[in-house]
Amino acid sequence: MHPSEHQIKIFSCRSSRYLAERIVKALGTELGKSLVTEFSDGEFQPAFDESVRGCTVFIVQSTFPPVDNLFELLLMIDAARRASAYKVIAVIPYFGWARQDRKDRPRVSIGAKMVANLLAAAGCDRVMTADLHADQIQGFFDFPVDHIFASMVFLPYVKNLKIENLSVAAPDMGGAKRVNAYARLLECPMIICHKSREKANVVGEMTAIGDVEGRNILILDDMVDTAGTVSKAADMLMERGALSVRVMATHAVLSGPAYERIARSCIKEVIVTDTLPLRPDKDVDTSKIKVLSIAELFAEVIDKVYNYQSISSHFVM
Image (cartoon, rainbow, N blue to C red; front, side):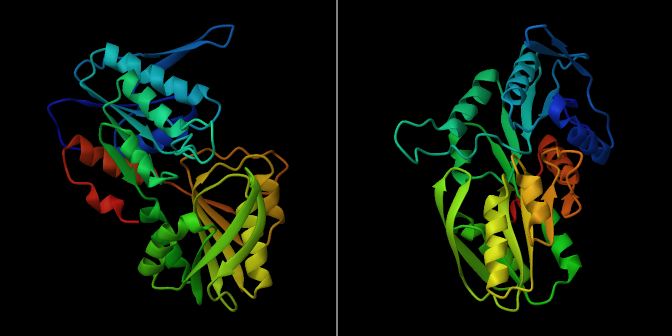
């Protein structure tokens, strides 16, 4: 990294420390010192264990449940601001509450907007994140959002597999834009799966639009949560004559019965990044899950933002 007017310091909250350590290793630096004091009633207080006065501070934390992860990030931002940091940048590989991006039924919250407001209130100057569930969330912020795409990691991996008769598929209509971009870059046909939901995390009927028979299919999504959608899509595609089905998703949420469903399914491989830690039960087979690190990508963007360089090349989907 090149010297800048304001020294760079990178810190991590507790739940994303594994990823922050990979990021600083890629940058050739060390993770800043911080600590968390815990009270007996569950309250906690993060603190910086070194000076951040006049520094450009990057704080790494994915905001997945429990809400403590989000609140720890907010407290760290507040602590940096009160310690006279020059700029405070939240590096949020997985932006939680992103599925609450609109009022899709009466009397519900818009959680993603509320999180944006909380980050601003805490004193955040900029956010870095990967593959938001909805692009329009960037508009919830009144400061810069660096929205990078894991395609920079995924595409080389897929190309190295050299899969014949490859087609890329969207698990629902909302993923059509992403799949169209991959189809163009991989020069292969695309398939759209159409699903109806009975309720949250429960898939009803599903069908496919496009040629499936005789194809090796790669299902693309921003996240895999309970794995219900991708498992059902894989079964449906195999019934229609697909040769194989792989799944590629940036965020390995993998809650509830996800690990068991993947292990039992006809899915050949599930390719994810390390924006979230894998947390399987000890007796669950995870051999189908391939984790690619997104740390070097974040390291490159952090370095360029710090040195006021263009990062537009990292926005290629």
